[in-house]
Image 1: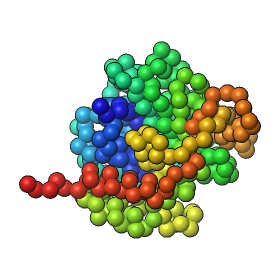
Image 2: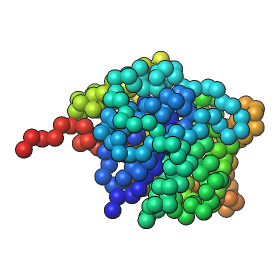
Image 3: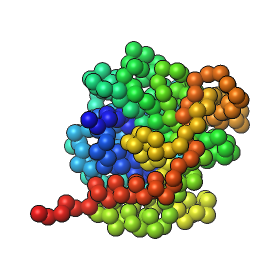
Image 4: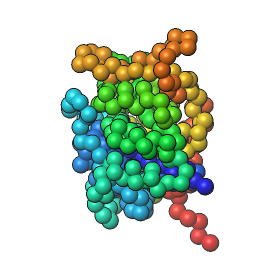
Length: 318
Ligand code: RIB
Ligand code: CA
């Protein structure tokens, strides 16, 4: 029986890889996709998610839009310089048009209905700002028992990518991240930059993706702009598929090696806003988040490529 999944996303190029990876993985069943502001504004993340589902031939998966801004303080910094103005490397318009508009229930309403309807625990995979998931936990405490686990991409225990020490998803809504990381009802696995920036898909990997069938070729083309940004900003001839690592962990639990740490998030308006503070003291108080700090990186990259290839390659004619 495949594990039911809800993906909350801000596509975003690495979100696109992550979403298609989930759809390519038979161990899970994507029951809903919900969108949040982040890399690009909410209307664009929502349109992109719809187009990606259409590309995958999965218009059957319900899609709903969520928060268009953080819970408390505005965070107007988007990530078009990384993902392109349209969020998908300038190629969103070339993707199939979705068959229908977003679900009128909205992200929290759709997530709640999926949780109510699921006979087995649902894995929730936030790969953008955590606003929608924080709202879900706040509005529907009665449904937390139906969430098997939360597997989130975000945060950093070391260097940041949006400020010196803050990562984009957490920086975009620190209050939401703090709410999710400090609750004890639902187990949380966090996949931070500390690992995702070590798990880089190089030029060879990208070439293999491009040669892995027509839909992977479209995906590889979308990554082009993102790749240019990594070259320009980091001097790396590779890309970090941040969100795909979180999805692979959700699909194959235990893929990433985690350490249990109580986390708190700096929510002041000073230079540390959005910084994730891990309490490494012995017997530190508070619920532990399973922080993914290590993995067999070649195996992870190979697994992502293998799954996408199997999904994209044209069926072998009988
Ligand atoms: O910091 C990386 C995260 O921010 C990824 O989820 C990327 O898509 C952006 O949302
Ligand atoms: Ca994302």
